[in-house]
Length: 295
Image 1: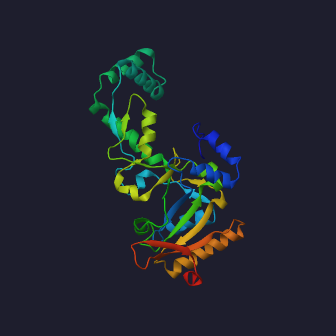
Image 2: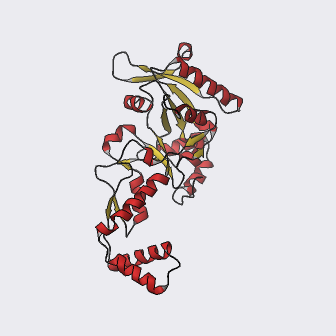
Image 3: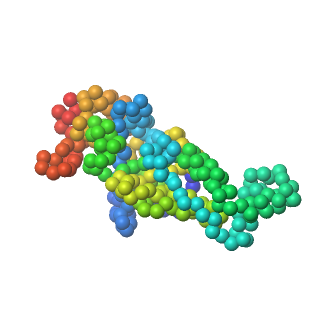
């Protein structure tokens, strides 16, 4: 499901030839270092939540969500412009007309191009909005957080600390998790030039968010036309499961059943941890789960 990526595929092949320790060393050499661990929070009080959690723990698949379902209406928004020379516009419009209506004859194509050349930004606005909606609806996105100790993440995405957080180690599935790229937090909407550099602008748009979300330290995998589908990952890449500090016994029991299924399927063991409130600071502490945490 992951499409070829000329920018990183050679690097992935090189990384796969290294042992795990060497891979970790390579990631630390990035400036800033590439996150070694990726985290995903799960609530438990939504109809699909437990099924998604089981899919990851037992099935080793990640659900790719549609940005249209995200809680931020500014997700994948852009400021459209049409800054270009006449020749660039001609080339763009001819390409569009031939792509959208390949059956047209030469005269009809030229008439359509002439109409487009006379179009204003207001004329093209509905087309832009339709294009943007199509991208939002069809793109498949898997979001990861940068920490298992963020109180806001536990509160917003893990049922007010009653859910769980999963930890993935990137180097244990470098071919899949290397596609999790950092989100850029910027104050201005990314500029999307509909005439020149359109695809480069799309890429910037897909990985840009308002700085108010910076606490998430988000990385995301994005695959075109894969919304609501599933991305397999190597079972060994799932390293830890962390219970929230308010986790309820019913969820603990359910998760234990998922872990038993995982063991029966022959997948590597997942270490179980528990989040706790720091006794003197506004801080979450993550420690190895004690027996009472699993009761």
